[in-house]
Amino acid sequence: MSTWQDVPLYKRSEGKSTLLYLDDKEQRLNNRYKELDETGKKIHGLLKENGELLKVENYDTDAWRNYVDYVDQMVSEGFKKIIHCNLTFFLRETDTAQSPDPLFESQLLLQVKKNLQNRNLLLNFFLQTPNMVFNPSMDENDKNTFYELIEDLLNTIYKQGSLIPRLASHTNQANYQDALEHMQDLGDLRNEFTERVNAVIAKANEFRALFNKYAYLWVDDRQEFMRQFLLYGHVLTQEEIEANAEQGVPQNPPTLQQFKEQVDTYESIYEEVSKFEDTKILDKWFRVDSRPFKQALLNIAKKWSFMFKQHLMDDVTNR
Image 1 (cartoon, rainbow, N blue to C red):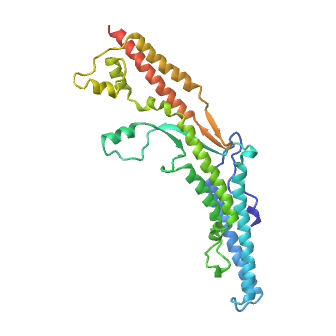
Image 2 (image 1 turned 30 degrees about the horizontal axis):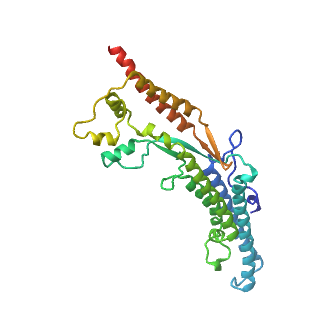
Image 3 (image 1 turned 60 degrees about the vertical axis):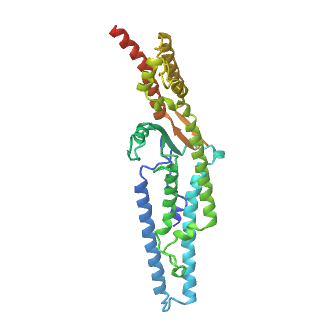
């Protein structure tokens, strides 16, 4: 079992990317699990063979049970070293004191959530309204979250202990996984890593919140904005609507200068967004890829600007 005590189940990508390489995850797991299964069969076979060589007639004697316990403990310690190797890999690669390269990444996107059902018009509005989301998600209420990814990786590591049936049958354990999951020192390492994960998730969500001030760009209805702008020179406030409930708000069409101000506003936003960084590094080992969100926001800002330009061009054409 020493073969796997110094070789983590997962590794970084080779080449330009430093991220954890998961493209061959299933194949890697299948290979490791198959090797452990075959090793388990050999161990059980050797134990049976030793019993026959020693001409053991009663396998319930203290001497034989002590021998089985001895071998069982060796296997247990071997598994402990395997799990320890994997946990320390993640701790080492996420240790900010070591200035690690990014190990994990999530993309910041602007997209419509599709996991809700369209039951009414109001819900349909929210369904069609894009949201800032991460992929994998940083929202615990979503599916396929980053935390679930981490838990899955950790579970596959501990699952290695399930591949060899327990030698000491009197422990009433089918394999070694349960014992490994209850080892305090391994649990401490696992908890330390998941605490780092939770901390970086919180920081990622804080980073996303910085862009909330631009939400009106993708939430507001451009056509409705333009309709009110053409009638009143601005979008009506609730106070204006209530104050003129009986006679209606007096119309006050926009001037050319007001059109220019609107265009300048959205052009300025475009320039501002174009200077956003493409990536954001959190705690040195986690990278946010903001490029999809940045591009989407640039496109939306350009649509707002073009809407006002197009109206002016159409107005000139139609005269």
